[in-house]
Amino acid sequence: MAESFFSQQRFFDNKNYPRGFSRHGDFTIKESLLLEKYGTAFKELDNEIRKPSTAEEKSFVSVCRGKKEASNEYEKIWLKYLNCVNKAKKFHTLSGGKPQVDVTDDFIDNDD
Image (tube, rainbow, N blue to C red):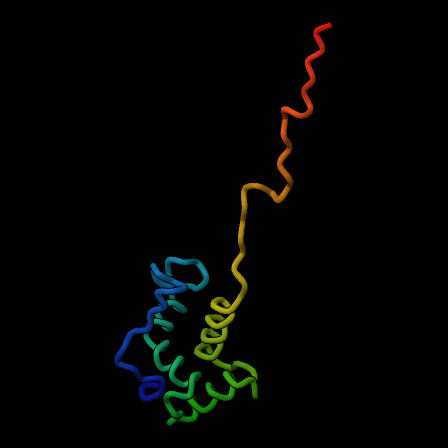
């Protein structure tokens, strides 16, 4: 594992996780640390910027291509990250989508 997934850069996703992986709640502390440490290599391998050099990296690329199931924690964490990033964002509104009613139309003053 020492030579697999080596990268000198820490991995940060400021677009989806601006306060860090551990503060968002999608990942455990261990998963957050592994993403920060190896995420750059994961991304480079997944995007074919970097060629796999070890058996672990070749297995990782196969998982990314959908050719095999994730078998170790590195593959599972990267798939979890991709799932979190690519899922549709939930949108909540306060209006509830009901049409607004004009209250003045319903009130009739009959002082006969």
